[in-house]
Length: 156
Image 1 (cartoon, one colour):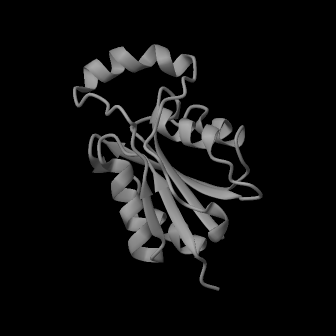
Image 2 (cartoon, rainbow, N blue to C red; image 1 turned 180 degrees about the horizontal axis):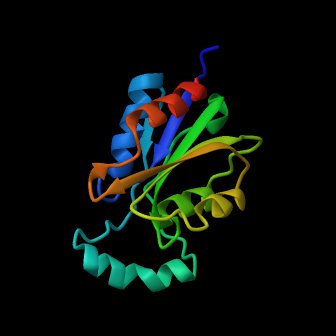
């Protein structure tokens, strides 16, 4: 059965976007890139200094408006990089503000080390159907592409 799906993601450095595009190529689902209203600095150390404390308080930030009817989709996939062992503030803000009623989602999580409590944090907002932990070393993909493709195949 072919699903009508959407891939919702936030990508700071491009790794999460790379995986979102892999999923789109394999599924032909629509893409929705979330962005903060006030863009983050491109200076990574400055970002760390500015955002670390905000992550501890689970600050909700303003994101650019989204005009999508999520009930039109029977498959929703959400992608986030790991920020301080959790989802990015952009994804947290999206989940806080958007109600995805009766939707189980599939999530992909990109990181350079450890998931931390990212999955558990997602589950505070909605039920998860499946997830994949995708490792990068800088911008180099470490998780085998075949493993990612197999996970994507199961989404269809």
